[in-house]
Image (cartoon, rainbow, N blue to C red; front, top):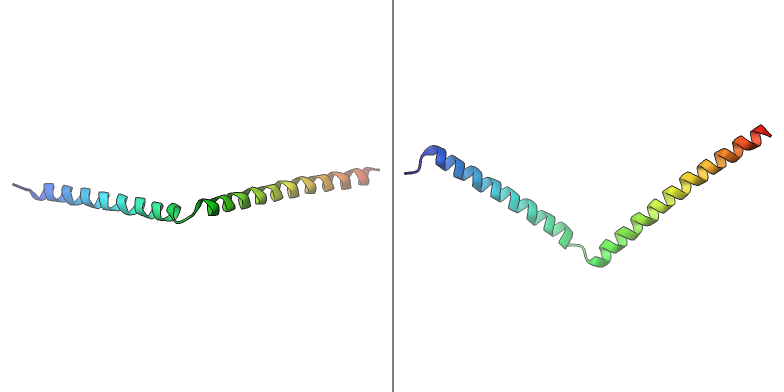
Length: 73
């Protein structure tokens, strides 16, 4: 017959499966809720933002170098 330990193990297994199912369902809802166009729009925004940051960084470095060169002259 079923012992207390077997019932506890079975209950733990059911809880693990339920937790995994909830996590997978939540992930599917998040990623499934976005259409391909929305994902592409987000990707384009991230690429544009990255380009802006890189542009700003190198322009800042260039201006600092020009200031340094003008100070030496």
